[in-house]
Structures are given as structure tokens and as C-alpha cells.
Figure 1 (cartoon, rainbow, N blue to C red):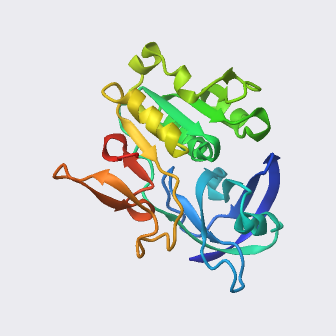
Figure 2: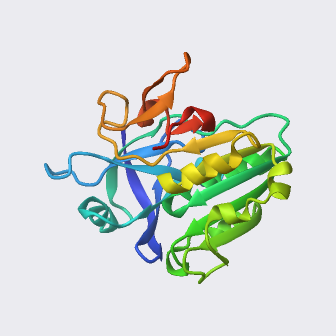
Length: 256
């Protein structure tokens, strides 16, 4: 736990914010991990907000997050200014696993599931892996981080209303030719998208799903964020997204 100073805070799309904290000492992280942020020091909103770590700035000078403003908690967070400090836990959870020897990786992000792909793309390209990123949004006015992802490889964009890129869904880009060239996939986004990606990749490409889930403690002490998973003996049980995830091998997750 640490109190971290906000270095930068701005709107980057409609109801989408970018915030940079000073990096905590001895920062150790994996792409896909999250920060658990308390949005106020008062008695209101005691539960923290889990927000994916998006980008570690050069030489660990800062850590960036992107989040959507929706409920009262994120509106309180939106009101914070550079110089303010926040109580932050993290990075927490299990992130994406990088595999030596991979040549080509597909990164798939939907909406607020796009931010963790930025740090992942940088680390993969740093290991010599070619990256193709597919991102999906409701509309152009909520699209984020496309230019930043373009630095690390081809970015394919889908929007529900066709205002940017191809009209449709991220799976519309997943041709047999593209999948045949990929060694691994990594996906984060809303459950319907993850379910569609999981089905599309089944038996074709191995990979990981990062789940979006409401959380209580963020460290595995409560049962607020359980999800159905296939256990080692083949039965279906429950695992905690905050501690066992948020990243899981794709075949392990049961998405109802």
C-alpha cells in the first residue's frame, strides 16, 4: 500500500480519462495486473476501484492508467488533480504470461479492456514478437490509445456504429489466415466479447483472457469476484478474479 502523487490527469475521449501516478519504489509488475485505488479518504466509498495498469513510463518514472467515468466513485476520481495523492494497492493479481520463442501475437481489447494491451504490446515487441492488435469500441468518440498502440505494430479497429474502422466486432477481423499466423492471443474486455473470442480461438490459437469483474478487497480475502473455471480434475468450480486472475488461460474460464 502506498500514497502516490498524481503527475498527470486528463480526458482522452468521451468519459475516458488518463492518469499518471509517480511510480512506487521497487515497482515489480506484469502486463495485465491492476491497481486497487481508494477514490476518497472519507468514510464514503470505502471499496476501492480496480483499474488495469496501462503503461509504465520510461525508466519506471511513472505508471499510467486509463479508466471510464461512470458511477459516483469514478466521478470522484475524475475530480482529482495533479499534485493530489491517492491510496493505492498494487500492482495486484496475475498478469499475462509471455512465452519465449513466439513470433506473432494477437492482442484483442474491447472498450476499457484496451488499456492493458499497451504495456503488453511494448513488452512483446521488446522480446522480438510481432504484434497485431485488434480493438473494438462502441463509437469513435470513445476510442482510446490507437496511436499509442500503432507504435508497436498493426492496429485493426472495429466500432459498433462504423464511425471508425470496420463496422462490427473484433472477431470480424479474425480470419483463418490471421489465426494461422499467430502463436498466441491475449484478450481483455467485456464478457460477450471474451466469449466470442474464446469460441473463435478454440482449437486454433492458445491464449489468455483477462476478466473484468467488480471486486471487494482485491487481495483474495472476500468472495466478491469469483468466476466459474474448469479445475484440475475437470470439474467446474470457482476462482477469485483478483487473486487467481484477472488473467486466466482461455480454456480454463467458463463464460456463461
